Length: 272
Image (cartoon, rainbow, N blue to C red; front, top):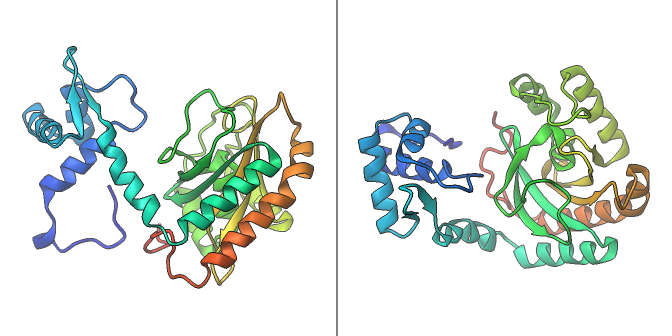
């Protein structure tokens, strides 16, 4: 786990840190985790992992199945819901996304950037176009997603210059951009056009276009996208059909949030 402001040693509770890190170990895991797997994730021994898991089970955040694996329970949703529901103007944002989804008849998302990944905060799903499930809290690599590229393209140049060398441009499909020079050129093209795109870079058959939500300085703090399938659209048709409305929705949300300080609680927004 990373925080933008490091607590003084006397205030840092290591047990709490390990407990939260333990919950993070279950991200994307459908079949549960054994104590050995959890201890490896925490870089600790199984005795410590056992105490952590039993405590989290007593609190209702984990349950243990008959095969001796631990699974997260619906109680963890309270943690994520508390964040989303506490966002300023969350109802207005959600309504804007719903209206966009109704107009384009597609799946609409809002995400923020954390390190080299995007984190989904809101989702209006009409149909899944990826071979994996996406929901609130899902994290995906920024370099192969339209929202990730939109945020990076409209971030301060010094932030992007510092971030790019630290990013692992892993290939997810044959269309994923894996060369840093090519990726930098892509961000330049996105800045020039005012929107971003992902043409089967995340998964084959998946298309997406996105626009940045910007602060008062014109720097991206989040992004909105429309996702669809190559069965329904070509990239060019999706751009012609959806981009003007995605840009309009992102601009509306930007205006609504520009009077607020740090509306998505990102802390040191451009720290890397």
